[in-house]
Amino acid sequence: MPRASQATGRRERNKQQKLERIIAAAGELFAERGVDDVTTQEIAEKADIGTGTLFLYAKNKGELLLLVQNSHYAQALEQGRLDAASVPEVADAVMAVVRPIVECNRAQVENGRSYLREMAFGDPSEPHHAQALAIVLQTEATLAALVAERSRLTGADAATFARLVSAAMFLTMAVSVNTTLTIDEVVAAIDEQVRLLTRQVGSQRRPARRRGAVSAE
Image (cartoon, rainbow, N blue to C red; front, top):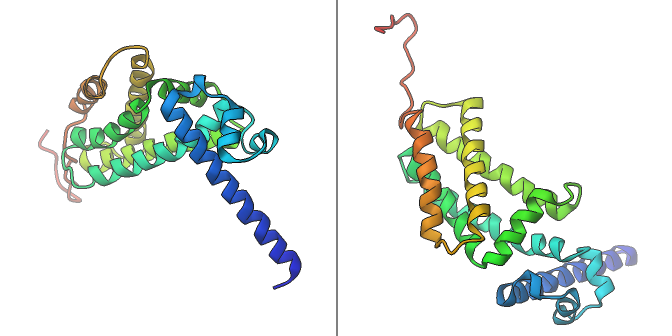
């Protein structure tokens, strides 16, 4: 292998190792004390890097929180997909996706509040913020697919339904971070909104009408 390629490979491995140490250090400190009570200096020391090096990966604590939490939310969404796969009823399937995300958000309430704030008001051109928004879009796509499979809605209508559910979920989580609501209570509040929406669309798709068939309506 050419020396230039070897050097590039080492640099990339070193960068990845530093990134993994930063995520582990920030994740541990944020989980223990909350994002507001942790300094970037403490994260750098725990990751065994300089503060200047830390800022090459994230410019502030908000970006560090996104870096840590994005992977957790992605895992929660994947768990929701798996849980919903065998659930036939549309509202139950939607809530199977929602619950792991709520659990992720409420694992550390302060961090959950800060994550939602960064997601909503952070710089969309910043890579970690862009990834957070991508997770929201992936969540909506998952919900739209479930709704299309299990209800009368398809296409753009299913996508709109999914956006409504996503908005209800994130708004309910945002409101609940300043309260003593439990995970079950937050889930129940979202479930009430989802049930109202699903009652408007029915629980099963209409069978396709045969060509030439006359409507009895």
